Amino acid sequence: MSYALLRPLLFALEAETAHRFTLDALRGLARIGLPPSPGPAPKACARKVMGIDFPNPVGLAAGLDKNGEYIDALARLGFGFLEVGTVTPRPQPGNPRPRLFRIPAARAVINRLGFNNDGADRLVENVRRARYRGVLGINIGKNADTPLERAADDYLACLRKVYPLASYVTVNVSSPNTRDLRRLQQAGELDHLLGALKSEQRKLADIHGKHVPLAVKISPDLDPAQVASIAESLLRHQVEAAIATNTTTAREAVAGMAHAGEAGGLSGTPLTAPSTGVIININQSLKGEIPVIGVGGIMNGGDAREKIAAGASLVQLYTGLVYRGPALVDECVAALCGQ
Image (cartoon, rainbow, N blue to C red; front, side, top):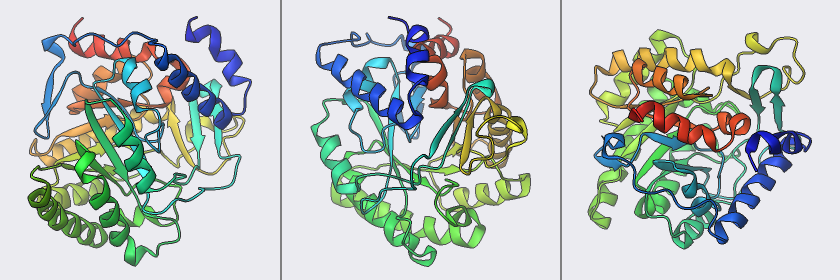
């Protein structure tokens, strides 16, 4: 059955309930071999980014599988890589429900989930159980009750736990749903955090005998001067990638629509252009020395091409899957691989 037929049934459910139902259904289908595992990607699809070989440039963004519970099921959808999390050192419930809202008229979603997850130890257990051996990013953050001045302690704790299992680790300093988290994008705060993480990365590389790249995920709600400042920090600390962008707190594109006044991060079609603008700005500031992963409002293959044209080396999907279903993955792969 096509996703277009299923979507009205899913949209009749409360958004977070539908999210969990869909993932559980995918996991159930995977246990009986459905959908069939995708065949090898054409060589034209392959990309080498951060020193990692990606079979195709279309990935799953963090946030959909926070605990790494559905890795094997999601791997059957044709992604070139998966990113799980955001994970925090300790389990936390996140913000009170309801905290996830669809805006179908704008093909958008607002979420204020707040890093709800079962903690780093549980995620590590789930990743170890998974059979998937492809490229896996793990997105890390801080617990909501950890003071900002001690944020680096949380990121370091997560990095130590996930390092042996990750292909790369994403440092999430841009979610709008953890109080004051975005202050970590400011020059002094970011320099302190990246200095600590890069020092620990070197130690962990010696311990585990492998180098796991670090990426930093940034906000779309940054002006060009702020983007340039972040780029300077990334270059100074030799961070391996920038991910642009997280969700936005802007509401102009959905003003007057149902749920538009809900607090949280807005994603989907209203984020397409702002995200692409940040990709252009940070790519120019990085001068090609650090790759950019583009995410935000990719709703079709043309949007994916625009992210690449703006300077992204890879792209990631999330909200587009809510509105388009798994067919979006194949469409984006075909758009970027010339199929």
